[in-house]
Amino acid sequence: MRKPALIKLALFLLGIGIGAFGAANIVNVLRQRDAYPRGVMNVMQHRYATLRQELRLKRCEVKTTAPALASLHQFAGDLEQVFYPDDTADAPFREFAQRLRDALATASGVADCPALAPTVDMIGAACDACHREYR
Picture 1 (cartoon, one colour):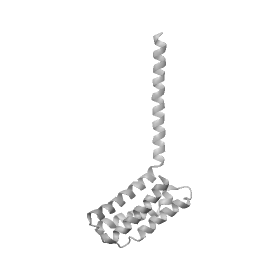
Picture 2 (cartoon, helix red, strand yellow):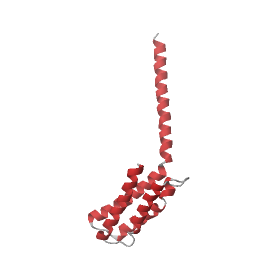
Picture 3 (tube, rainbow, N blue to C red):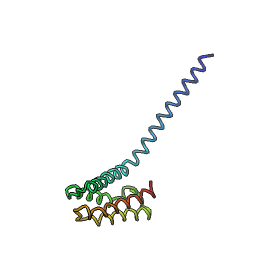
Picture 4 (cartoon, rainbow, N blue to C red):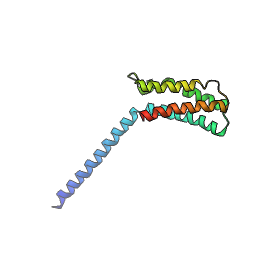
């Protein structure tokens, strides 16, 4: 009588193990699908944090801020393609991306903290507005 109960328990545990393995594989595949957009957002977040850190420390050196702004500007130009590679981005997303590009356009040639601060605020506001809508 004891053997059928052990066999049922073993099969139950085997089923749970196989199910967990399958679920982990599915989650991994879904995460890989979003790897590129997540990577772009992570790099943009890092570059934005660099700008904010420069403002906080009141350094705003061109050798640090110029590459961060250039990187943000480059990625901002490709946002629609990153998030909608096979389709046209919807109107609100295009508007948010354009707000970010407009904010970055005001930053060209900015070298001191007082001039950079409003631009960094506009960049943050553009990012926050999009994240409120799409996160």
